[in-house]
Image 1 (tube, rainbow over the protein chains, first blue to last red):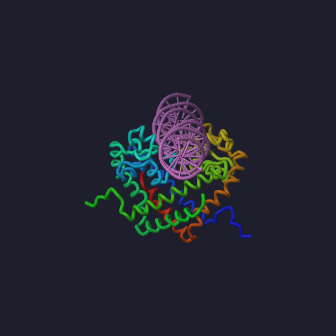
Image 2 (cartoon, rainbow over the protein chains, first blue to last red):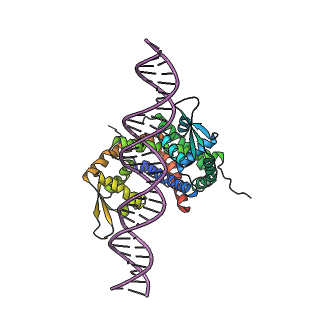
Image 3 (tube, protein in one colour):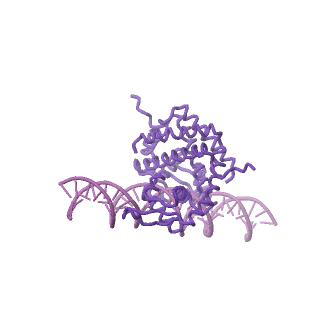
Length: 154
Length: 154
DNA sequence: CCGATTTAGTTGACGCATCAACCACGCGCG
DNA sequence: CGCGCGTGGTTGATGCGTCAACTAAATCGG
């Protein structure tokens, strides 16, 4: 007896639906805004943000690790960005296999222009929706879910 | 004076980061699980779920409206799904421009197989992470953010 | 009834994400 | 030394999502 049923209880489903709808709209709007406001995609933004935060030059794998991206994803992304002049690849002196990713001046300029606009959108769409206390609660629950997931397989 | 600064306060940034990290991992895992557990993509799943919920046959635009998808996205998706035999397009008798999307028997079978597995993953990764009270709080805050966004332009 | 506009849907190009297969270098061990 | 393996990274195929441009049918105003 007492097998878990193959559906969610209504209150559980309600919570899940609310989260999914919010999350989709929020992420969707923000990434379209980045595109529209700057010459960067959301992915470009993330890469350049990490990269410039760390002195404009980083080991490929380290960058992938910080973003929690697969190496293949990172590689494709760097290829596209290099083609558009936002970053460059450099050989790694310490390790013949390795490569370094470097932000170009143009890449640096692009993120410096994009960042305030993006932050403003995050504020407008998300931060301003809740009080600080509510934000804290929300963050706390998010971290709980994250921690829970990290204990789960697959 | 009192211009909003071009960055977030640390407590605000902390909340934002926690949410983003959780959301990325959760959505990523779930959609990879759907792919692995069934012959459906996450997008296929959503389409077939709505479609079968509504009697296996729906007006194209209505389907797009329910999922809050752009028509172009819907159209590409239906094309891919039709190619794989999960749905079919039919002409709309009432409106010469219109088209109907119909779940095929194979599509119906696919979602019936996939649904319990997906629900179980949602439960395992998300629902089980929190108490019902916490889920309610989380849902409430999500709905508040959603409502706030809907009052915002762009 | 005719022309203008709106609505329904499609298409092509492009960037993004994942998977699987692959290449190349470094390193440890016999 | 040389061989085998792990690691660092690339590549190609395929599906997804967006934008902009387009076709065709419906509808509205005169």
